[in-house]
Amino acid sequence: MTRVMIVDDHPMWRESVARDLGSRGYDVVGTAADAPSAVRIAAAVRPDVVVMDLQLGTTSGVDATRDIVAAAPDTRVLVLSASAEQDDVLDAVKNGASGYLVKSASLDELDDAVGRTADGDAVFSAGLAGLLLGEYRRLHDAPDDDAPTLTERETEVLRLVSRGLSARQIATRLTLSHRTVENHVQNTLRKLQLHNRVELTRYAIEHGITDDPE
Amino acid sequence: MDSPHEGNAAPDFLLPLWRAVVAFRLIAWVVAVAVFVRGWDRFPDHRIAIVLLVLMAAWTAVVTVAYSTDAGRRSRMAGYDLVVTVAFVAANLLTQSAAALSDGAPILTSLWATGPIFALAVERGRDGGMIGAVAIGAALIALRQRIGDQEIFNTTLFLVAGVTLGYAATTTRRATSVLREALAAEGATAERERLSRSIHDGVLQVLAIVRRRGTEIGGDAAELSALAAEQEVALRSLMTSRPTSSGGQVDLAATLRLRATSRIEVVTPAGELMLARRTVEDIVAAVGEALNNVVEHAGSDARAWITAEDLGDRLLVSVRDDGVGIAPGRLVVAQESGHLGVAQSIRGRIADLGGTVALQTSSGQGTEWELTVPKARP
Image 1 (cartoon, each protein chain N blue to C red):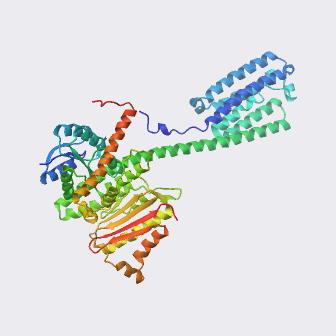
Image 2: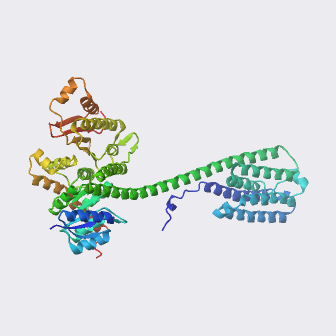
Image 3: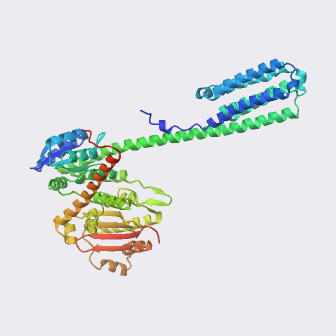
């Protein structure tokens, strides 16, 4: 049984999502309303999937995502946000979230997204694919030799995701296996997350932050 | 904690004028000393003249301090300055006889006495300058007991200087207050934007909840759910669209995002896609034509995706729907029968921009327009 934790500052939303996911056979093992308690609870209960909102009152879901992925590497974070802030979404996936869904998604879509996140797949909306294509373009134009780049195939796949095609439709169109398409999508995300970690480490060394305060 | 508007404090543009008033007074006192030394033989009692010079120095010090502080400038110092200075002008009677004065004997307060005219002009604008000029002019005339060319010339000069400086001070004061208001308004707008972001986020939350619960409950609630969904998309696209333009350039990404509905998703990079206004207009018109095509032919349940991608020197814009698709040959038929709608609007416009159009469609598989447009106009 997949163990799920829900992080949202809105009590009604937490209950609604917990009930919905419970009815679909998920085991809701914890909820949290702000970033610090989300990190603490996730580290203690080690859920398979954290369903994460980005605006947590005065605290940030992006920070919570980064800290949870660091504290519990087997836990996967699925961002479920009402936020219209594109930079927040991009920051969340760069900091380790493995998928993004808007809150207006239907229960079927949410069910499917949590299931795929638990299986280790990346859950991409068309909008997120567009943001990633933009981010790779930005990195390509930036004067940084270490910046990750997309292969031609990855660009092709990401572009089709951004146009609203499902992994299965993409597999048919490019005559690839469904698994291969999923791998390409995941790679685009992993490269960006890896680059982000390297950047953070480099920043820490340059600024003399050598050790974690904890 | 700093107050939110502290960083926005407008500089007081009157300060340089006040500094000039103070500097003028100090220089004028030195001139008074010079008048005394040069006219040494024409002052019958040197001790009284020296006492007067010392008192003038003391008053100069008082107004220097007053005009150099905020509190002093806000008090009615310039008015007191005028009264005291007129008294100093009268005190010349102690250094010279009335007869010598009307004969044009040197007086210690000549230039120094004009100080309050400028102080009043800066403090009270045109009227202040005028009152100061008239008062000092009249005091000098009364002292000399005559109205000659020199007196008329001096008084006129005082008036011109006082009124001109007064106008300048008033204009400066208005500019300062306009700037201060503008800075306050800017601060208030930023604060309102911050507030509206968090309020909008709350509204989005509630709309999302209504949408979910409504769908679950079904029946009439499903209708509410659909309405909530529409409003949610509208609000989200409002929040993410900042149609910005600068120097004839327009943000294509923000402009396209305005087309989002609950059936049409707009996918763009996070930042801006700034292009020439005409290019953006042509692309948006072509996209609109492709969307009309979706509405007319793809079926009422079809969804559509608009994407815009930056390829460096080119843009890749696509419009895809998941509808029934266009049967092979239909476009050609439309073109030949004179119904140029789709063909001309899209191919024509994009060709004018030096770009190309690719169309992928087949019956039952939706339609995908792919527009490749160079960023620079041909």
